[in-house]
Length: 79
Image (cartoon, rainbow, N blue to C red; front, side, top):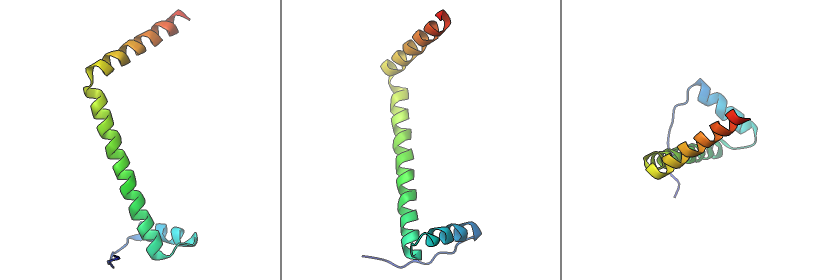
């Protein structure tokens, strides 16, 4: 079910909306698409942050990462 809302746009948002409309989207399509894409980007950033936090708390993974970094440094220094 669709629901109508009202929103006030500043100059930057109006210019962005105009660019989207210039590509053939209606105002409603442009706003819906932008909202969904923004939410998807936020969800992706949150998922990435959670993955980083999990990796940082994994002591075995951190030890392996340090060992690989140490090996790479020794190989670089030898060459």
